[in-house]
Amino acid sequence: MKIKYGTVLRSIAGKLYTEKMRTHVLQALPFWIASLITGLVAVGYAKLFALSEHWSTMIVGTHTWLLFLLTPVCFTAAWWIVKRFEKKAAGSGIPQVMAAIDLANPRYNYLVDKFLSIKVIIVKILSSMLMVTGGGAVGREGPTVQIAGSIFRKVNQLIPDSWPKVSKKNMIITGAAAGLAAAFNTPLGGIVFAVEELAKSHISYFKTAIFTSVIIAGLTAQAIIGPYLYLGYPDAGNVATVTFLFVIIVALICGALGSLMSKIIIRIMKWKRTFNSNKKELLYVIAVSLVFAAIAFFVGTGVLSSGKEAMTSILFSSDKHTGWTLPLLRMAGPILCFTTGGAGGVFAPALSAGATIGALTGEIANMTGSNVNILALAGMVAFLTGITRSPFTSAILVLEMTDRHNVIFHLMLAGIVASFTAMLVDKHSFYDQLKHLYLADAYKEDEEPVKITAGK
Image 1 (spheres, rainbow, N blue to C red):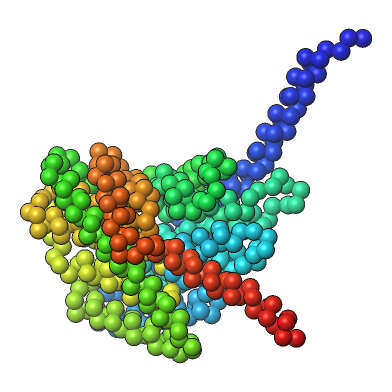
Image 2 (image 1 turned 135 degrees about the vertical axis):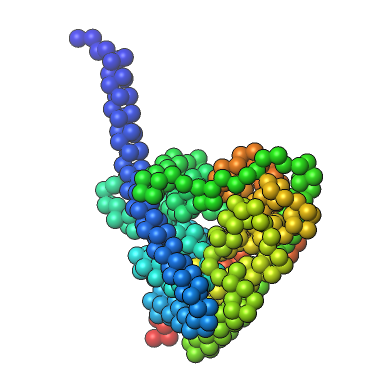
């Protein structure tokens, strides 16, 4: 009997192809499930955060003096929840995710669980809600990244041993990208963020997972709240040629100030680490909250909240006057709030600070309309770049928030100029420095059991 080798080979190849496809689908399934959950949680968190901001605005609008009671109570409660239940839930969340990615190996597997867990999600949401209820100048975007990373981490832990192997590190990176995409409704921004800020390995190893996870998380969010832009469609037409020059000026200023703000926050946080008791930390939180309330009462309420209202006011009103105080308030707010130890990010506050600086520059240069809008958008990119040192992520995020593709070169220029300027103020990015602080604490925790055993 003749053996038809061609038929046999095709049969074997077909089986191998089918098995390979099955493996790919099984490997992708945890990413898809985690992305769906991330989209749902991100939408719920966004609604709770907006509700907290509404409560704060309503209270302040009625009696501004109530800030002297509301802010200390809320800031203290936000700090206590983090201190009591999960210290790794403090602040933005992006540095914690970066630390978890560095620790994602069998040796430090249990340390990753301290950065990314269900407990972190609950504490993060509650603490950030309290911060913003008290008027805190914090955002939800960084926290959403840590929340998404925690969701992806948990799904990864639930995968059976018989399942095709899924990389823990890639799972966390993809979760962070999906979280940012769902928070801002910026899928490209999420992908670029993963590549520019988080990924240490080549993206080709997990590009499909990132693309599909970002799409699923984004579509889930859109299915609930509809398609939307974070900021809307500002007028960006009829831009004067001279505006390019002022974009560079704004980028230089915002890049330097963004880096300086980061440096001040890091310095304060390192100084706080010398405190040897919870009492000193508590006194610091109360003192800062009272200073914050006093600034809002005596100087201006522009220091309050994430700053989205300030951005929309500049971009969509005919009166783009900001004055000298608003940019200072938008920088002072995050410095005071972030150093309390409560949860909350700096993405939105950084964007609002940049927008006000851009608008002020346009005002000084006697610009109007769309030209001021361009400078505000460039300021947003530049200030965020000064903090993150991720110019392409910053430019793509602002581009997707506004859908103004005709200004892509202005935004890219602002990001690149700001990146170089920021390095003159501080060589290292805000998130990178915080990541190393968290890693130092994690390695210290890892050594303590060894020391105890050696002592016995």
